[in-house]
Length: 194
Image (tube, rainbow, N blue to C red; front, side, top):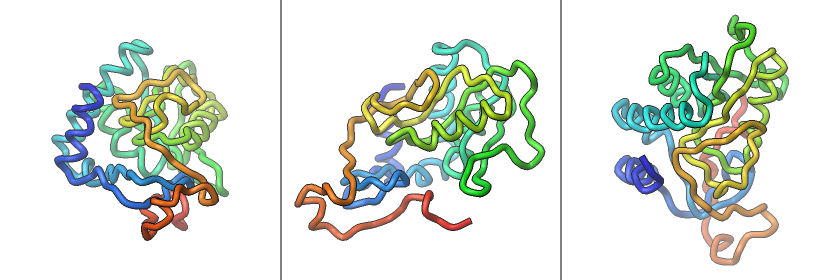
């Protein structure tokens, strides 16, 4: 599966949106990938995550488990783990910091794939990788369905993406005039209160 195939899944689900969006990173963009419109369909999610599991195996060999950041990474993390035949866990924010909760524990020496949905700056991925390492995990690969950074994001571990896009994203004080003229939508999840 290549970038065009991934975007075809998003388009078919009505998940490739244009307008003025505030992303979870706080950056503004004219393009938003509404991944939950894709993930509501098990068959689409299975196709994407099966391909991502293949990329993970190519990059890192076999892994022992997948860990994702809540909330957005839970579905692709679970399905990718299913495709790899390994357990799935996730980290959640507690006091503003990602942590393993719900009695999740990492077996000593486990090879871990950190699985994310969409990466823009890599901040959530880095925070997730750091939480895994603090819990004693060995992150051998960071993987995502879509890398919006065109390969510039640094998730803090070797990085693979099923699709790579170079979608401009801007700080609020540096918006191009054509984006500033469009009403803002804030579909991201980082600023939601728990």
